[in-house]
Image (cartoon, rainbow, N blue to C red):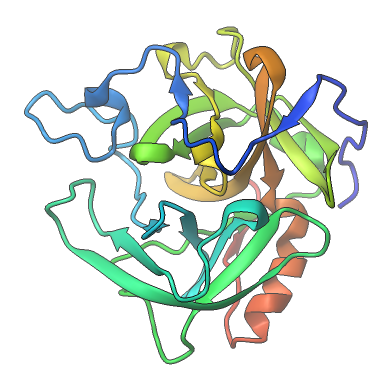
Length: 259
């Protein structure tokens, strides 16, 4: 994609270890605001306006973000294994309807940390569960400054701002990464909702809101030392690579134009 910033991130990057299961840090965390499934009369969920039903978890707590009728996106280094079951919740309450499906396969996208998984071809995920579109703009700089909703372990949701796009290399994976810092100086301000990823968040999504709808922007990948910032694999940079995998299964990504 032309226009992306491919300067290397130099801020002492550290790979999120798959064995570390800490939950995403939210600057002024309160269960009533930041827990999607908080059950109480004081609930004031930060993401109440939006549909998070397409974010599922496996029996081992690994993440699946639904792209189409039976394909999902996760992280190569921490994705649901073949044979595991993934559950999606149609509402923001655990007491509401849920739908569970068995992972039957998947594949890596190029040399990235992205992993497209799928359920059996005969399975169509219930229509009450969201399929997320991926935006495809002309230049990377058009995404900078977008406010993100970051989803993490324990179904915790916070916010941040996409600060930069850059090439990132960890081990055998290399990709365009979306960087968001943890400095309490976001523009636009995210206040007490500001996020910093932890190990258990690997593979979960970040969204932007366009036309009152969630669009998939990133899949959690890495962090810096000293709580400087977090990175996602930047999903729009791999729109056509992901779509090629879906096409082999008779499906396709949703896409939208400019805001």
